[in-house]
Image (cartoon, rainbow, N blue to C red; front, side, top):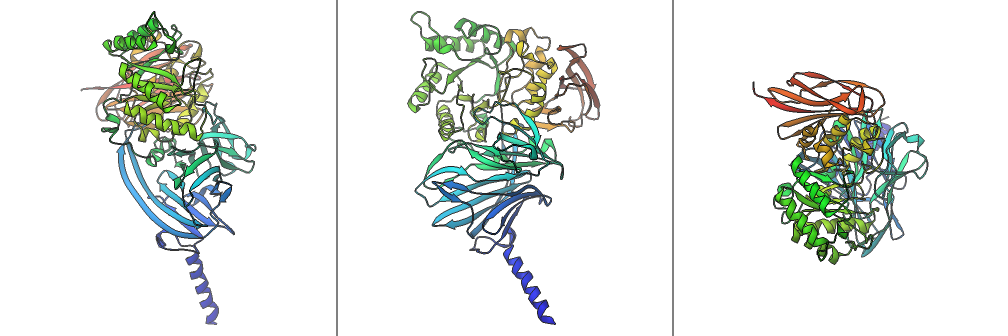
Length: 629
């Protein structure tokens, strides 16, 4: 009678040995583990590596609810599939808890995770699955050693989502300038492209996810391709060639209970390499790195990119208190007698400096319109050296339109070269950011967004962007236009967008003279280019409403934009404010006219609740000024 019980007890022990968790098996040879589970520091999120009949797959769960269902891992290297279908060799755990200075939605990042390196050996090739689990998501990558050369042809990583989840995504994986749409997972058709970040809203449990990548430095960029079974496959933009040991970029799944959690996630920055202190001795405070506001002629409707007109733009930048004038395409053709474009640009730089304004200059990556590009290293460094010599402080580089390994390598090389010459950079026609701002504090912005260079309508798009594209990092949307690109939204909506859309080089689409004449000039010119704190207020809803409270130093702003064609009325809790009394200077919608606004003023404290009414596609912007009482 006792024998069956003994056998049963032994069977249970055997199963436990086959399903050891990470806390039970570290850094020794393991050949029979079926499940490895890594928990976040707060225990809510778990990454599970599970073995099916012939290989390992992964899942991600939140409080034991799967948010990423059974999904594949692996790569195709020079025609050979790596699919984690051999036994685990070793498991090494590691962890970190730190904070560090950053630049983006806030100025202090938190890096707190539990991690593990899970080693497999197949035909003398070592494959390590490197996993980090944070309180706000998961990041993982592959480390490969044992091959002299590799061609990474395909990535086999997939992300399987619940069929009823809602996905916000855009279809462009070249320059990332697509319109965002939303649809449930089960309605995706085979081969639909998603340019990350793709944001997902789950109903059970009620959570938000965002899928993207980080630490992309020498690899083809990753986008996602849907099948018709609720699975999204990693898609690489061409082959990647490697010599010797290599690591892939990180695959990132951010997870948050609220939109505020998602917006404030630091995972992309956390897994990216810290800046070189020799190049950036004071990090983001290195003397030649200066966030600022810029005038810009391209959308201004106030004259061409001529030498004399750019002097006027510098005059107006000075009148507005802006730090920069970005001189766009066209200056390379300047000529006046024996003076070439470099001589004339030097005159503009010297003229502008006397006004307190510094110059950014546009440059194409490829050859364009008879002018050499800067693909070639020697030409690039010569161009940078000349810019430095004449006093240009930053360069806007345009027309990449690809996420190939060649382009990704160029970004890294250009940022390094620019740092050597103490120049800031802004990339246009570019792919999504993947953590470059931590490694290269001289990257001040990049496009990779459907901004005001395009055509309206804006409202719904603008209320999706903060919870999709901006999760990847800064973006040069070029906010505010009072001419043909004003679209269906209100003045207050335009102004509020320049608070909500993060860009340390805050380049405005509005003409400088138009802004000087604008009734709400003082509000616009008071908006800072960087933020110490961001709070996404609870009323926010993707595609319908964005309400942000943002702090720079002791200065708080509140900004709201309406994404729907109906009025919205909001009650805003001001508990984020500090002690004391504040004057709230605001710009609200004019109920009678869209292309208009009304100044508003109110005295408030942190205990106040204010009511805001937004026009259809409208907005609100407010600045809090401390009153000593």
